[in-house]
Length: 214
Length: 214
Image (tube, rainbow over all chains, first blue to last red; front, side, top):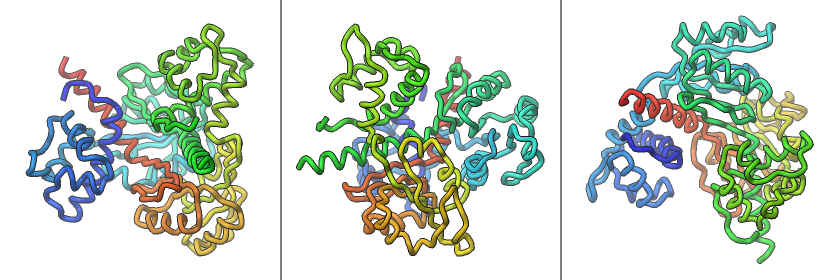
């Protein structure tokens, strides 16, 4: 467990976790890598290779115990523990994220919301009150916040990230359309929506080009 | 241009495009792969390798022409042409996506919004009226819609994707927390927010584990 796992493998873990959760919910107790391969549409050898990074989890010819595998991946993902989140920026996106019950069932507990706009102070987002940005540092310390969600414009995101890092945040979930420069002890996960949309556009274009040339 | 480019390379193109756009906006005319490497924090050899997939774009020792490179990547991404979008599901997330002016400046034009909830029909989201889901097929044909954005619950997403495919949609930008099964001529880009948050949790956990064991 101590060797460095590639981020490509890490990126696939939540998907395994999602499928295993569904199998567990529908009462499946054991599954072979071939069966998992069929429903997830990745090769069985990819699955075995990915799992080997974490010691394997199962026996050849015997298959995986679904519940055990689900629990192990949940521990690897660190979602067997609770995380405390704050959201900075309470526009439509921040409000959407605050409302995802899916996150809270995974142990991501939404504790606070902050905005620059005084007319919003005291209003509710989910079951949490919107507070002034000035209170962020105190709030992080008092409430043991480990993750900050940034849904603010990109020109505000870099100075805000610096503030959060000084205040001891462990991780930033960044929706601002800019790359953040953080020290090694702070984790960042970017959701660059424009980039995702451009990738979709690339794939439309590529398909049409290939199709025309036939 | 006709060989298959890996999706890993494709994933990096929007980021190049974003940095080149900023360089262009600040008046930079030429840039070497080393300078680009410094600001983007990827290796110069990675940059050259990525660009070689598309014929190179520049000359050794002479650097890249920023505007030319920006334009070429924009063509490769297919964002030199306009795309027509509809959003299905007009909750907070759909509303947030409808409001991103950033998308429209990239040529992604938001043309229609659809919901199951009759109390929303006729209300506005951005500058577009919310319509009943029943009108989707007609609307796609009449307005030459190529991209559908799904911000609906996962149990509704699979039947909706089937409907959209039958109606001739070219691409689905999927925010529902489920994988869609589509034919080759339909492109899908998933934004699985829970998966992204779990990846962040993994990286917090990994850092703490490595730190404790020292």
